[in-house]
Image (cartoon, rainbow, N blue to C red; front, top):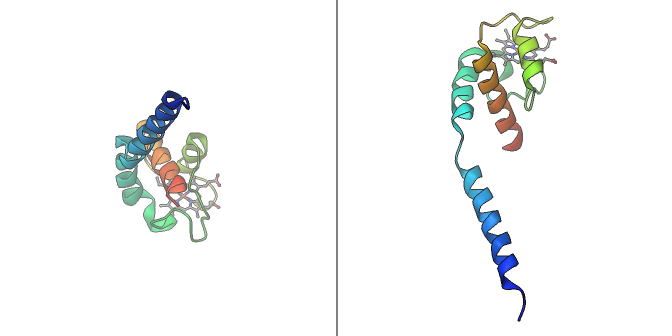
Length: 97
Ligand code: HEC
């Protein structure tokens, strides 16, 4: 008799993970709205094209630095929480490609 229980447990784990992926977590939804409002004009709908390059998957520090104003990107008025939501959305775009 093969050990069925560990296999069953592994199957359940996979199912649980894929179910979690199917739902879009709230910060990603908030981040999408913020991105569309503040960033999409320059970075495009996929955040990966144009002269500003691919910014998908940028971390908190990178986004905070950029929104403070860098070379060709103007300062953008976003709060710390908004930056975190945008970072969640950029991470989502990266994994959804
Ligand atoms: C007016 C156009 C414009 C807008 C609006 C804009 N960006 Fe940018 N962004 C740029 C350009 C151009 C660059 C390329 C870097 C450079 O040379 O300045 C850039 C670069 C970046 C980078 C990469 C910085 C690095 O370290 O290389 C990040 C992250 C970023 N932007 C995030 C954002 C986010 C988040 C928003 C919205 C809150 C936003 N940008 C809105 C023009 C813009």
